[in-house]
Image (cartoon, rainbow, N blue to C red; front, side, top):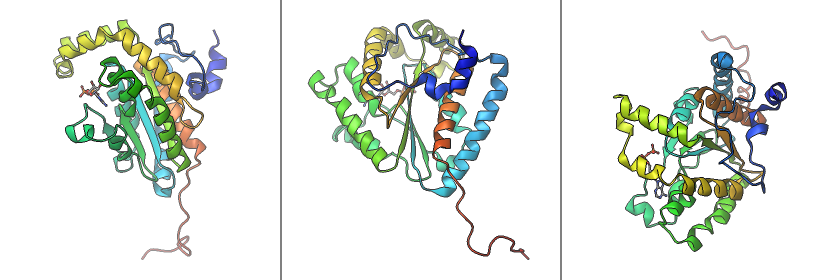
Length: 276
Ligand code: ADP
């Protein structure tokens, strides 16, 4: 019962993967609430979304910092829902969302970072990646789409790529949504049962589910190998959508706060001008 203390520490501190640490997702509590109460969630989320809206407005106006948010997680972990809620706070003009699917033949004809680099946000933008270059050490590993000697080198490539981006001024926030196998089963079942969600379900999902253990190993190693001071991973307990939304919102708002985005000064003489 560390609730009051946890609340004070904030999700950024609580959920960051320390560089060099070991990650064990099998024992991770995906239903954790850190002393937060569901009754307060609506107000807390409204507050954090208002903060995000204000910060994004400044960031966009200032046009100084690119911010890249990477969202990863197993099927049905809530990537789409998280992006819908968080990006809902932003002006869409400044917040491009890119979903990375199975690579096209043209993409496959290039190195795996080629398609990714092209979508890295520019100054003032908050670019959100729904899946990312990390698929190239996840699905590629689990399905043996490349030999181990090839994908294993990618941890170092990715660290270097993200180092280059941050050296060039990009702020990187990486969110891993953690659910447990029971929660995934319930969500898949809901997709089958609910006509409005059925389109999201495919039998391939059940095949992937059988590889839960392989994916867990791939996620753990990804988190261990690529969480750095300059581009940290946050492991967000995502069984409860309300806690997930709050945690991601606060992590992002606190990160944006750190950039101290400010509206650019008005041109000389503007203040006090009377518009006829
Ligand atoms: P969603 O992201 O909503 O699940 P899809 O059902 O279209 O969207 O799934 C996208 C698929 O593309 C996923 O199965 C993912 O693993 C796959 N994918 C993404 N990047 C790569 C990649 N680099 N190599 C192979 N498959 C990939």
